[in-house]
Image (cartoon, chains in turn brown, blue):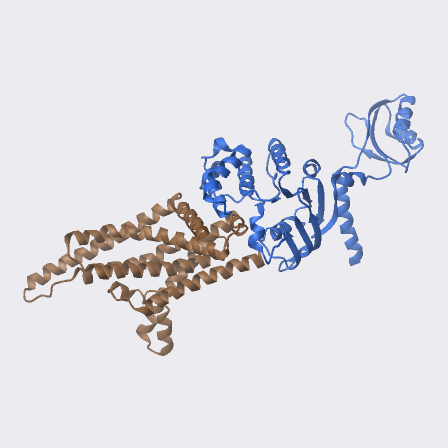
Length: 256
Length: 320
């Protein structure tokens, strides 16, 4: 445990002593801010319209009109930003030779892997935390239900963890950060669009393919639904990613 | 302390280390000598558990590198060829991180960091960002991370490469000062370094050990014959050659380059002859000027070249 925290702490310091942490937080802040603005603007416009039409208009829910689409968009932005977090995890160590320090120190491979993954998670949480500014504004001037907000963030965290685990694996296969980032990004994009298959095909295999899509499992969370099958999907995907990373490190020893 | 038996490491296409065996006892400083690509780094990487051996056994402090790698790693301090540094960290921050990695109890970490900073004379730079350090300082920080947990075995891969002569001298002194408490293996292709700081030499060539011996013994492997470098002025070369060939005990002469139109030869004597005095007398009696006369002793460099060369020619014979 101590070793995991040592590695994790080193990763966090690594992010925050380079511009990457601030860049990511800044980028996410701007993009999420724009989503927030357009979602609330649309919400206000729709509210005004329904009042003008008069009648027994349903009270509009901030959760359905603002928070759910905003978190959905955030999860897509996450797919683009997370490769930038994960790409350096192992590629940088391999390039600079510091991997030799880690792998010749009295600590186990899986401690390195989990420590690095946790460090990247903390970085990702810091990026997500930027969005809390906007969401808290909604709580200040509206009465949204806080439960779907929490499940939405839980979904974002699980989804982020999955992509980070995949990204960590890809990063461990190369010494080039650009390649690691690009490959992770393409993989994420593919895993995202897999869900489209089910829209034009409802054969059994298509459902299976769509099931692998990262985004289909996120949608229930943004609506406030916690489904065991989604949690199981994310957690097993995280384990798969971390397991592949450990195999990759092992093969690094044998091939080198 | 270190025991290697029949160690072989094969990569996809080539054999980096081929069936080598050697032992290092406690407190020794062993120089691992070989050309680039001879298999020095690979052997060290096996000893530090970075790479597993393809065949054979290696153990450090009684622990097997494959079976008990965690124990081996605890007993080893390792400085790879490029020091494993994080450029964005400060020296003290980096050493604290390494200290934690090596499992030093958290109460002792600060003390140990201070001690190694002191020992390597980097105390005044301890809050400098590593990325801004000069090559010499980086090497010192690299050494500091290798000794921070006070390991009984130190494995140093080319610890003086890329340093200027002054820094090389300092690094050597430092390594020598560590020799008391640590068993050290250091690799190098600089021969004078081995002569100065090692008690034992392992010469490795193309993945095989060609010599294991003490530095003193290697020096004693001198040829039984004497060879002398001689420089003469005031006479044409053919005359000098003819005169010198008449000296008793001279086997042959080889012309050497010289400045200012002087004549220079390397003179090889026959076995069991002392030719220096006779040569000097011959020159002076001929009325020429004797500018220089000195015995050419076989340096470690020549022994090394000879050993690695003969290994190659042997192989050629085999393939023929």
